[in-house]
Image 1: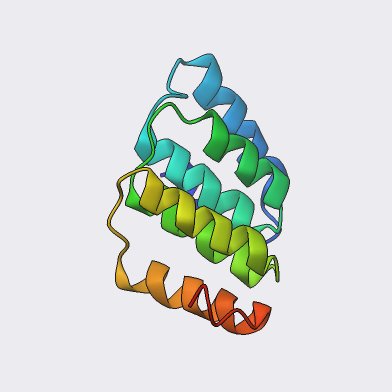
Image 2: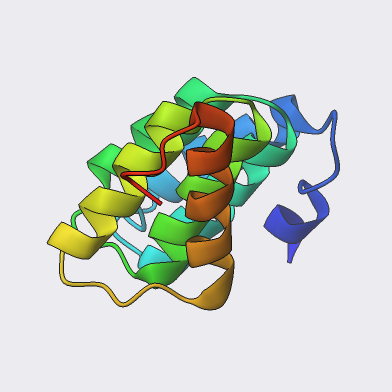
Length: 116
């Protein structure tokens, strides 16, 4: 799809244009499209845009949560990454291996043995 082609770093303006089209067509509640937009904004370094999408999603799945956890960890926002991991658990989601490893990495960076 066109949205997948926007996953290249530097394709932020095209991705934002596609995001507008998704909303205008009433597809903003799609978990699949929300996850793609989180990935798009993450690849482009637009953390706040990804956060906005995530927190506006009426329904999130393990892909949504794991994407946000990894995005924050990759950006060096380890506390936020760990907070998201805890939020995922509170939301009743079972973490996949990558989410667990990313959260553990955040604990290491925060030097938080109690959390890890």
